[in-house]
Image 1 (spheres, rainbow, N blue to C red):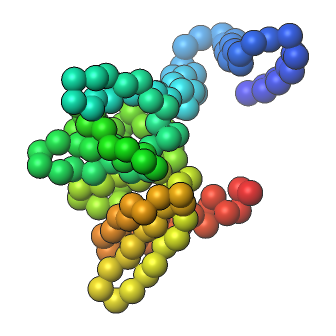
Image 2 (spheres, one colour; image 1 turned 90 degrees about the vertical axis):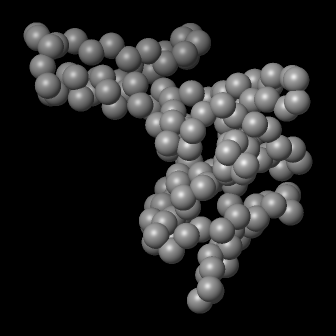
Length: 151
């Protein structure tokens, strides 16, 4: 496979073109990977009778509460009409499941406190906190270490 990257400052957005002699398994996998990278950056949120279109990067975490999924930002709470497993599929890679009832944005983590009884996450510029279950703690630590290496 030959890979060529052409940088053009006149372009307004990135365009990926795949030239191939035929549609193969490899081309299909490349297409799926590229599609996955283009996951939604904004979702529809609700608060009382108002609909909000928010950037998912502003979300600290999603949590189930009273059979609804709540999205928490630094200073507000919204309802979203997705199930957690659906959110796992449509959210960007910065989000990960941390318990049976929560998904969080790993880019918003300020502190992670590990103790014998629980694992607590604190967010910057917010009083909100969330617990990580033991099942997801090691995976979260691994993701945070990978993020640190990328910096």
